[in-house]
Length: 387
Image 1 (tube, helix red, strand yellow):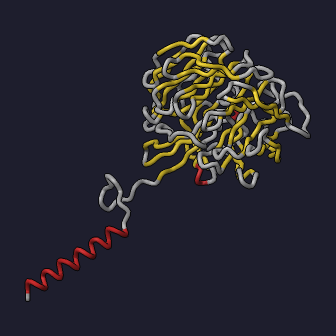
Image 2 (image 1 turned 135 degrees about the horizontal axis):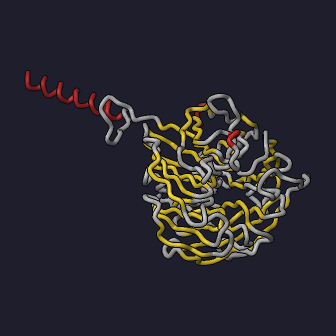
Image 3 (image 1 turned 45 degrees about the vertical axis):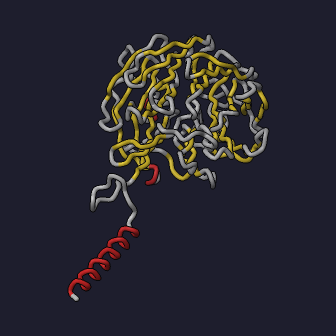
């Protein structure tokens, strides 16, 4: 009898254990009694990100809490990035590698590599011809670094900044986008109406897209890498190109707004981005202090509405979840409602503006995901192991 009672108690205990286990999520490598760290989303805004203007955020990285109404979190000083006179140099680009746990900042002269965990500068290297807006491969191992409006791009090892290869295009190297699948890099120059496309296996130009009607300024691509949307000199609007056939498809002009003199960049539209779901294109209008929104579910894209910004927008990107638009004016725009929900301010309540910002997610103190600075579409893109 006692034996039967013991068996019954054992069975009931086992059922209770199974029930408790079924109601508790299984966490790989979890410490008993401790929940997994909450993933925190931050916006890293690098300054001076509007020319060399220190009045828009000083010299360093302003960090904002995305889930807490983009409130200021901290300021990371960057002792590097100085010119020959010892003054802060213009920031030209920013990107992140989860392979190295680093944020990379390009300036007129150099690239800085800063550890995201320790927030310490690991290295800074100057390159012949200077540096413009960089882009890092999806696996986080390779950097494509344009010289400063010169003849070539440098292909670099992200771990140490060493040069792997030089790609000569003679196009006035400027903006750079590494494709989401890691197979191609898109190279736009200030002195050419052609978009060069580099094969990452050989680090050589494999094809060209265009010609567009003028030299290419900011641009973005869709996730499947079939379409490119480009700003060009002299146009309040954008043009669309086919990345597969290499042909220019459409020219889209903003209606109802005048073209006037802009503060910076010298072109009416400097800044274009796709919402992550690729349903809309958001376009910067410097003279009118506007961001124009286009319906991208039709081709050519159709003008829908506009949002007024607090200052001239010269760049735009989006939060990884597509909820917010980030023009360089420092306005935080709700994509769905088109309303400005807040504006970026530093710890002393000064306005922060920058054309160089990137979203980074942390679990504990470790970076686990990152966005991009270009407003690249995210449909049909291969899962990104770096960002």
